[in-house]
Length: 139
Ligand code: SF4
Image (cartoon, rainbow, N blue to C red; front, top):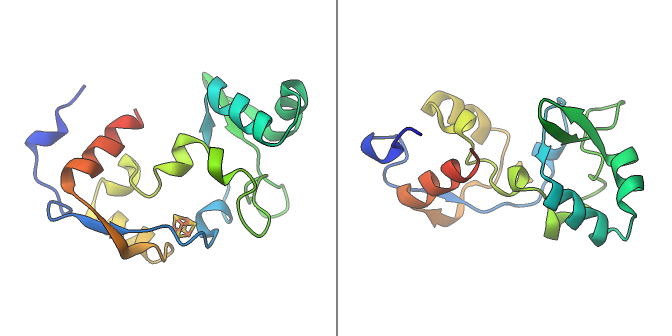
């Protein structure tokens, strides 16, 4: 795996971010939110649903695994309804947003995402090291 610590980045001085739970990243254009077996079990348990029912209604197969489903009408996450219904046990991909490789790969892309995410630029400061750790945890 590439050693990201050897490079310089636009976030070398850290980034302030605290999620405001606005739901902007849970709604809108559809995408893939990968979920592991452990995350599926945790969400099913949290919702008090048998695993087979959870699998039949909340996830769809994608390359080498499963993704959370979305509502067909608007592309929003199947668990978004005036807030995240599984917030305490949400998948790692949701927990690590917006510190995704695809978002941090350029400052332009980061600025674009920052226009949609009101949590960026506010609250807790994440150091360069913490950000790199989070990014690497998503591989
Ligand atoms: S768009 Fe940003 S502030 Fe809103 S829910 Fe997503 S991460 Fe949180």
